[in-house]
Amino acid sequence: MSHIVLGTAGHIDHGKTSLVRALTGRDTDTLREEQERKITIDLGFAHLGDLATIIDVPGHERFIKNMVTGVATVDFILLVVAADDGIMPQTREHLDILRLLGVEQGMIVLTKTALAEEDWIELVCEELREFTAGTFLENAPLHRVDSLSGLGIPELKQDLEGTIAALPDRRRKGIFRLFVDRSFSVRGHGTVCTGTVLSGQLALGDEVEVLPAGLRARARGLQVHGEACETVTSGDRAALNLQGVHREDVARGDCLAAPGILRSSRLLDVDLSLLADSPRLEMRDRVRLHIGTSEVMARVVLLGRENLDPGTSGLVQLRLEEEVCALRGDRFVIRRYSPARTIGGGEVVDPSPPRHRPHASKAHELLGPAADLQALPGLMRTARQALWKRKDFQARTGLPLEDLQALLAEFVTREELVAPGEDCWIEAGRWKQLRDSLLGCLEDYHRDFPEQEAMPLAELRSRSRLGEEGRLFDLLLEDLAEEITLRQGEVIRKGHEARISPALRSRMDRLLGVLEKRALPPPRPPDLARELEVSATELRRLFKLCEREGLLVCLSPEVSVLPSHLEELISSLRALAEGLPGGAFTVSQAGQRLDSPRRFTVPLLEYTDSRGLTARQGDERIFVDK
Image (cartoon, rainbow, N blue to C red; front, side, top):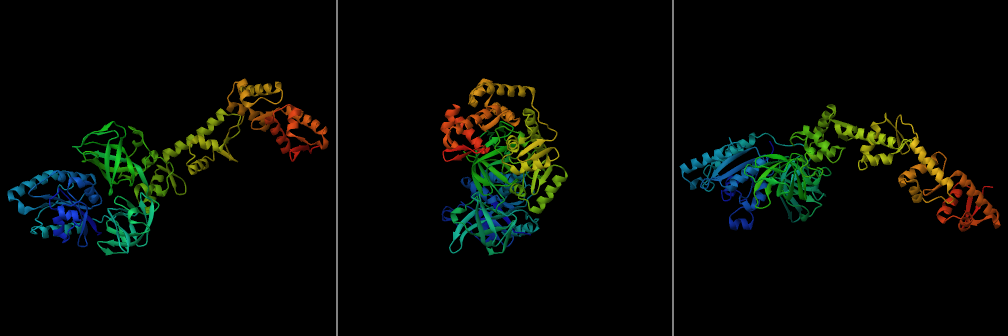
């Protein structure tokens, strides 16, 4: 059996710290202010033999965030109630928090029994049984103790040791993950962080990533229960001596994880349940989110509804003011911003979702409970990215690779996922949709431009909106090999034959007619487009078609002439050259001879150069083709 983490909960001054001292011999109030005020302010820690680490939490309502941090990772809880007070406000809030965080094991401890009469104690015990009915503590053992005199402590300790020893092994496989609840410096050693290992394991010398900062560090030293060790594993209450980061680089709320897998986010899609006595939750209400050991302010965006009533649950998006690192299925608590009180909690459905519009529900129609991994294909269908790698699954679920591989193979067999390439998967419905969409884009292009034999691949990529997922675009083209033909940056739908429609042929004839009638140089493209009453895009299309059929010669992107006009121009330039010494002429002389502006003359001469008719000699040209 692994070590467990045992936490306390209960109202202020109900004897939690005294109870821990009686069980372990250790005073967990180590801060000077705690000792002076005789109240617990921050988390305290003690060891119950080799079986458990005890986290003592504050009971004052002002320190609830510290209490949530303390119980966020516990396996077992001691709900402490003072016999002379009975159930108090923080008793109720602490139990609500424990339920919302999914704590399932615990005991009830009635303290300060020396201060109350037997009849009153019996009454409080009955009240406690009614209070815990319907919760995980409904049938839990109830111990009556007095920490100062030691009454009932041996029996409680014996019961605790037996219960803990009988608990099932809660080691969780997966990537290493630990939420930091304390960080400090030790002279001669550097930065030390403590927390409970949530899953996986870490060995001495292994590298970890500090999230959300994304810093890398190495485990220079490891301890469990104050003893040095070579490895820490799921369920261990561990201290890590980190090399490569400073004390100020790591703080409570940070996550230490296996490097390169988890991601931080300011958006969380969650399944949220409100307490029965909670106020109604409205759109964009500001709340305090407690997840792991962090507290972050957030805005609530309701999905598929206008508000969330007390005692109900629903899917919402939390928009955070700071980044957090979470996994699908992580538990959380939310409290009102002001006045601060616990109002609900639940579990993370998607730790890295797209930004949903308020009231949107379509994105979550297919999602099941976060704990149900069979809902992953539905999550993939609504996610921002289409193509997932192994690391994408791990970043959301934290599953170990062997379990993940088996799950993915099962999804592929059931045709819920498609594996189009190595280390990549896509939801089957989304794959078919993208495949059909790509074919549709190509068919639309052939319909709109029937004269074009092929569609440029760059344009298909742009129209398909898959530019950011280049690999997915390439995989789709590979899968469509039987229906399309690829050639030198172009794509053709098999069976397509280029043809010029009568209407298009008529527009081409009009263009040629205008150019035939006009004197050289030809009109500028904007003037020509106005005369023909076509757009600039359509004019370029007509130019390309006429050039493809040899009806026009392209001198530059802006200048095209009829072949017969080109022959006349070249003959005129030859005549110019023959009348000059050495047959050399300048651009200016050519422009004067042709009565054309430089915007036409220069492209013409560059054309004759490219065809080997003329050659440059400094600022002059000569005819080399006799």
